[in-house]
Length: 103
Image (cartoon, rainbow, N blue to C red; front, side):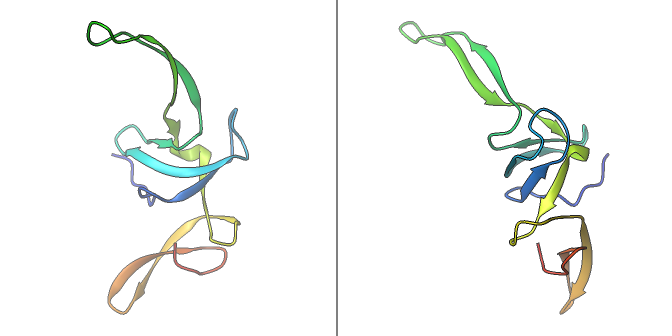
């Protein structure tokens, strides 16, 4: 199992691959495979069969998973950063290593 600090709804930036430089929101995380689905990133075309009689099949674009190592957290100010943990008031919170603000 891969240990990751990423959570759903985090804003991330792609640092490698065909979508390098783009940003998006995390939709789903597969911790075992170490892959993440990010909104609007790594779009692929997929053929869909009609499910019922009268439905139309066709080709649609969907987000494919991207490896977690190709992503970095983004702060509210728009800077890319790594994440760390800090204890605040008896609670463990994720912080930006660069600025120290909570993620």
